[in-house]
Amino acid sequence: MNLFCIGLSHHTADVATREQFTGSATTESIVRQTGCAEALLLTTCNRVEVYAVSDRRVSTDEIARCLIRKANSDPHQYAPPFYRYEANKCAHHLFRVASGLDSMVVGESEILGQAKKAYESARQSGAVGPYLHRLFQRAFRVAKQVRTHTEIARGAVSVGSVAVDLAQRIFGKLTDCKVLVLGAGETSELTARALVSRGVSDIRVSNRSADRANELAQAVGGCAVVPFDEWMVQCREIDILITSTASEMPLLTPDKLAPMLRERVDRPLFIIDIAVPRDVDPSANEMDGVYLYDIDSIRSVAEQSLALRRQHVVAAEAMIAEHVRDFVDSISRGINRASQISEHPSLGENPLHASEL
Amino acid sequence: MERYLLIVSTICFLAAVLHTAVELRTGVFRPMRFNFFAVGLGFIFQTAFLSLRGHALGRCPLTNLFEVFIFLAWSVALMYMLVGSIYRLSLMGAFTAPLVVLLQGFALLAPIDRPHPSRLPANPWVEFHASISLVAYGAFALACIAGVMYLVQERQLKTHHLHSIFYHLPPLADLFTAMTRLLWWGFVLYTLGIVSGFFTGHPLPRVQVVAAIGIWLLYAAILQGRHLRWLAPKRVAALCIIGFSAALVLLWGITFTAELNPTP
Image 1 (spheres, rainbow over the protein chains, first blue to last red):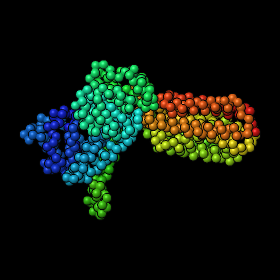
Image 2: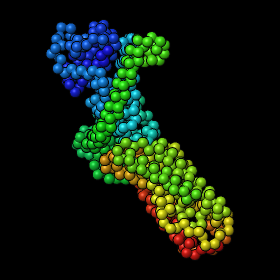
Image 3: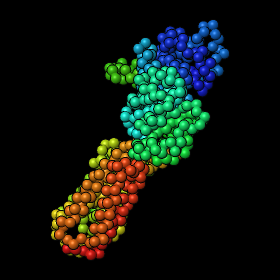
Image 4: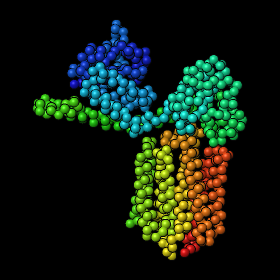
């Protein structure tokens, strides 16, 4: 049996190339066209990969022909970006993919869900047999272990998630936090959505254009709209301020903040200033209880998180290598066992060994 | 035998410290289970030691500086075990263990385990006063640790430089709640300790009384400032550290002068 993986990813192909191979093939069509004993198609925005088991050697071209969207296109012109991994290298690659080490954002967890979905879909279509079953179950286990025992998934790496992460570091639970979104930009909306996803229910929106404020309020869901000339009053009540107006001058300065802070001495104020030029005077960060993050500092936090994740790649790789060795050993033991069973049928009475293979 | 119990207890706390240090060095930090069990085990051995020593003395084991240090370390561990799950499951164990190791390590290494010149008769008021005051010290010690954690976290948030330890510290709001709660516990216990001191039947040294009331006033001022919202959380955190440092100096002064002028 040949266990192999053929695919392309953001490492080897640009999005224009990747989209040529996305969307037309299914696991069933691959099995039907190539005659593989087992097959699984993993498709995400960053990769298209086929994991398969076959009695004969299936060429990369054959898989490329299955994946290509336009029937009359020549897959040969796309052959270079395809990679191919066989046997233990295939297992190694899948374990890295599932653990998020091969992802564009190292350590991201979405890929694990996508791999599980692909596995479930292939299993339901009957294309997953004992080899892929064991391979993928092991991959899910490895991914979980890598995430638990290293910091590979630690820290936030997008503006929205950094904002949420920092807010949780300051306030703990966000359910009681009051948020004011000042200026209805796209990033503000994403940040507000991220906060809502973590339990924030009191969000107020204020914008020079009331129509745009209403749009954002509806998009985020159930937000109150505050007239733009009243946003300063709101600042006395809120815990988190997301600001992204087009103002040329800072809207908030230490002088304006000082009287507000006197009324809320034991309540911190977290300000996310996404505007360029900035809406909040940077010196406001020096004030007690004010945590000011502009777009550069949020990016810096995201980069620190990524750097932290990269530090743990070596540890994660070591874990994966160990699992690959163990997996190959277990498969070899299974194969030896199978050959013994074929020579001595009485050994096959144990259903566990039979099902393992 | 009892000294071995204390050595084993110290090793347990030291294991928690080393575990934290190694994990922080590698950048992978999971303080929860290991630290909690290490501190829990250390606490059991501490309790066994104090129990044996108490039986041998026929009274609460607070007759010399050595026993005071061990009792204080026990109080700190007790407070750590009692404080809510949120703090137990955080980095607080990692911050608690070094303090206990310092206290017990010093007690074990320094020649301070000298038997009291005279066998002290059991005086329930003295024992209550001393033990309740030391448990109050345990609460103040933990408030101090929470204060240190608050300032570390606050500093990282202000400077935008987040070390991996940042992700294991409890949120600022939780640390502030913990500090406030521990200050109240410590304050109530300390008040009981001071009041019970007046019922011991012994003449009280004026300097110690003034210093103890001074510390009581400091903590009362912190709590009042907190209650009236005059003090920002950062200042409360800093005052928790200052308050405990002052309380430690007072404790050392009390035990030192008590050893110089033993009273029957």
